[in-house]
View 1 (cartoon, rainbow, N blue to C red):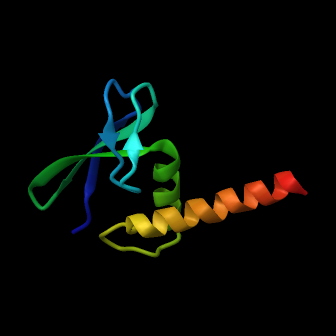
View 2 (cartoon, rainbow, N blue to C red):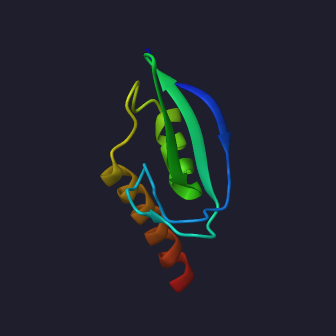
View 3 (cartoon, rainbow, N blue to C red):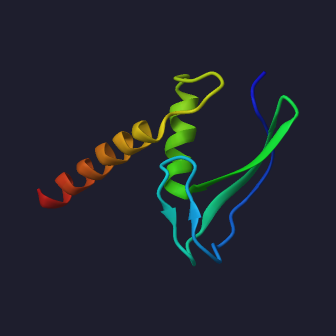
Length: 92
């Protein structure tokens, strides 16, 4: 059985949080995604930077994962690839 999303909101952080996607820090004042999830009788809150959530969703949409999502290293690799491409374009 795959996890069920019960709800999502995008608050501004009042304190530091750990991003569940990249394991980085969500800084106070930064908008982030907070999702309430349930799977097999267990419920939890998943928090992520908005960019990390977008990367995670794109990876899942491409069908790379069925139940578990991408590892933080894979999120980092995609972000490095995107940022490298953007930096390369700016220098041109």
